[in-house]
Length: 151
Image (cartoon, rainbow, N blue to C red; front, top):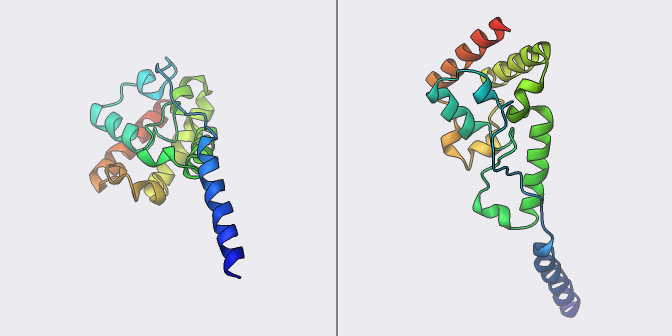
């Protein structure tokens, strides 16, 4: 019995070390495209800063990765999470959306912020600076509502 436990532990350890050499494709870009939300609209600096801290890691083409992204299988989980986030909304591709789609996305963003669905609790657990204060939340909602009404 002891020998089989040691063999299983060794295989697990070798596997864990082995997967560290399987690379992931980082979600990082050297430039911000002209279609980016922040470039398309005159976003106030305070809102701009908060959106970048709270949203852009998962919803843009430039993720600021934490140290633990170097460890598998965590890197795979983060990569999948970012892909899902970008598929739902990519701020870097904002201006490529139709006006109707933009209005729909803004409505969804507002709803998710109001209901504390975004940023995700799993994200804010580690990234405490991504948590919205009540004032920040209201400022962002007001800005987005005004923006939606102009579309």
